[in-house]
Length: 214
Image (cartoon, rainbow, N blue to C red; front, top):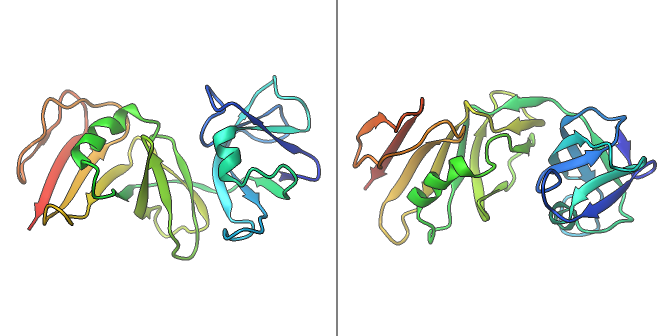
């Protein structure tokens, strides 16, 4: 574990490798998923961890953890805050259920998922129920469920074998829609099956299903 006593957070323009959940360090810390905890005086839980992905970047000066400005602001943007970076167990999620705001078309988002960075995203799975959100293509989606088995207090990773369900509450349309999507990027869709029909999608190895419940 390293922290603010030995290192400082350095915000950089969020682009390329250092954007979103990705941070850079020049050594002395293993690459891969980790937890970044920042102590704050605000409404967030003190020390509530944020899952990140650590990359070894030779250009980062010693004693510095480079983060994108987007993540830096999400953490509170306080350079003098106490923080720590530590490794944690990682479990690939078997299923992820996301809830959309009612004004967003779920079919449109599902078509965009293979072109986003959703695959390989990581998130902290606490041991108690709390509101979790995941940004997908610029849209904050509520995480209704992330299945990492019986494990808790782990980093959940969205991998190529993770089933992604997109749920849209039917406030306007009068129905609830659940769509399953493959976030591995290995599939393409010729069309959306109608009704309860299930069929192989495009030339990929996944299935795309739509279910509507009156």
